[in-house]
Structure formats: structure tokens, C-alpha cells
Image (cartoon, rainbow, N blue to C red):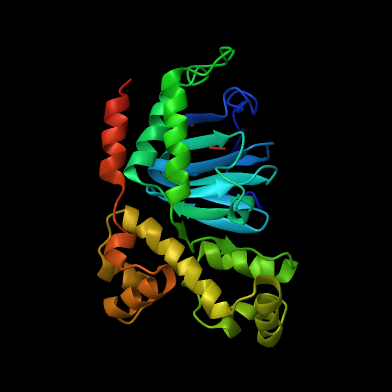
Length: 289
């Protein structure tokens, strides 16, 4: 994971650590745009999402854009970092154990965040003893926190997976190309143009995409464009403007790509989470990892 932004350290890793007697914990952390939480790992699973703003979660094998209403599930011991693209109020849920033993809880993936799940995690973070600073956990989890944790587990089991993660290769030549494309996805449209600066032929790069990522260049680039579209949508850009900026000939062509890729119409996929987030922050009136 290359240092794209100036880095800041994660909070004390043990401060919000879930325990056998307190198996679900959460924290809220505001992060400024153009900051980056250093790569780190821990022994428990987590789910991270933004109440407001946009961030990118990076691991050694994938990167995911995280706007409101989307979250990244990260299993235990997976190294990850956070790059903040727009000022973000980040919520992180920590779990002593995954919701169940299904295989998909053992890999990173993107899931939808329902309004109920977002509010439950926000309330759990607000009530966590460590939210105001280092604190010793009481001997027993309060009844309110236990009830919220149970509902959170149920909501996680219902959460829909979304094909939004961008897989990253291990081959250095392909990794360099992929990182450049993520940073500036519309610089070139053709594989030959991207390959020209990678030190490998277009044929070799196409083979590396198949061998390392199990996909074609065009399919992989489509995921990158979709991630970029998410960022633009959070800025309130109309679909027609987004389509044009990403190089699509028409809004209908862009709409067809979104529907084909994520299985839902753009109107639903890009539905803003800002209203939910603002309501949640107002109610808090009272930081990802």
C-alpha cells in the first residue's frame, strides 16, 4: 500500500478491542480529507463505513471506496489502511466473532448499510466507555448495549454484498499500472495505452489481469470507474455529468453499465446517504482504522 496521503496513526488498538464479555464495540472518529490512517491489523473483525464523507479502505489485495450507506467488512489479521477522500465521520464496528461461520465472513467485501444498522452502530459508539477516552470496561456489558449488539448481528446477516471491491495484483508491473489507473481512471481508455508506460506489452498485461485478478482489463477498469462514480455522486453530480466525466457516450450507456455490474438501477445504487448521516449527527449533538 503506497503512501498516497500524509499518514496519521490509528487510535490505540486495544482501546476499543472487543472482549468475550463485551463482544461488539464501536467508535466514531472524524477524519480530514487527504489524511491516511497508517496500515495496521488486529485480532478481531471489523466493519467500517462513513456517516458523512468518502474514504478508501486499502488492503494488500483490494481497495474499496466507502461512501455513506456502504461498508467494508475486514476479517481478523488483515492489514488495512484508510485514505480519506472527503472529510469523513467514520464509524467502525468491532466484533469478537463474525455473525456466523459462513465463508464470506472470512474475506474482505463491501456490504450495504441499512438506516437501522447505521443508527445502531452510531448509538453503540456513542455509549462505548472508550469513546470519550481510554477507559476500563465494566465487568458486564449493559443491557442496552447487549440489545443493540444483538440487533446489529441480525442486520449484518441481512446486509447485501455488493461487487464494489477493486482487486489488486501482486505483480509489480501490474500493480503500478493498477494504482495509476485508480488515481486517474480516465487518462486512457485502451489497454495498449496503459501498457505503454508499464514496461510490459499489452498482451502480457492482459495475461496478468487474467492470471492475477481473474478478470479482463475492461472489467477491472469498469470497477474503478464505478468507484469513481460513487465519489462524484456523493458530491451531488447529476448522472449525465458523471457519465460524461467517466467517458461514456450517453447517460443510458452509463446506466446500463451500473445496472449490469451491481444488479440495481443507478437511482438506487447512488441514492445519497447524506440525509441519514446528517440526522444521525444531529441526534448525537452530544473516529477507522
